[in-house]
Image (cartoon, rainbow, N blue to C red):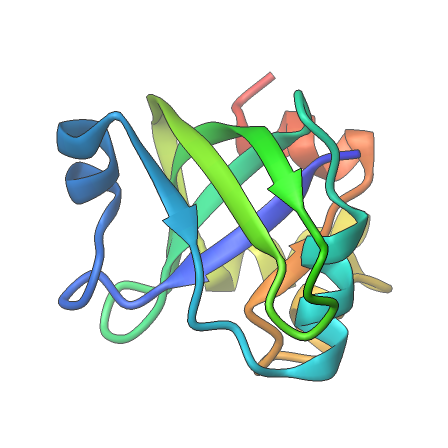
Length: 126
């Protein structure tokens, strides 16, 4: 299943992930977001979304491994993919009917959001 991961670019940006090549996605405390992290599987595809002043999907990544031994703090290792051919703004996402029932719109504070395959392909520009 694809997911969208939100990050504040001044704290950790997609460029930082590309530089590091991989990282452990941590600092998530919202119970619904933590549940989404626990449900991830190696190979799941990810979209990295910059919050703050940008509010746009900017890059791709994938899940390398998930250690959910501590259910409150799952350790999800991810690896960088490529920048999206065309970043997608929150305004574009909100205006797209593919996202009308998405937690990305309905639960805007959620930092780890499941995506449908159709939503994922749209964000990748396919």
